[in-house]
Image 1 (cartoon, rainbow, N blue to C red):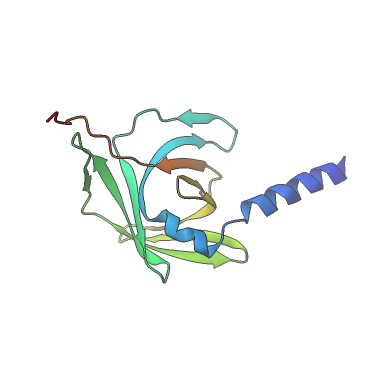
Image 2: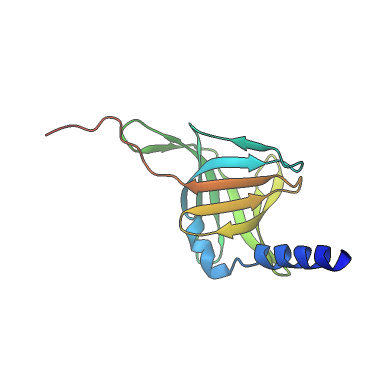
Length: 142
């Protein structure tokens, strides 16, 4: 039984460390939260979002994070407040370090692709995001 438990933990650890620095350019852009899984396994779903997360990093893996508000015409209004971010590597784990005048925090990058982002905080909450698509509710017929 102990061997099975050890193998399961090993597989999860290996799977969680599959993010490469080359994948990080996928972080740039708008992200919409889809669900949060609490440490006890409870899931909180988000069907409609009025606030998106916006990330922008450069080739040095530094940049900023802001909140963005989708508009009816398919555009976004980006909040003036921003947090500086930096991607760091702790052994084999990539983390987003957030720095602001109010606090510092970090999130571990569990998975990142062009359309999917999974982050985990220090309280063991896991955040699932999908790439945000603009929705134009004011399309004009011509």
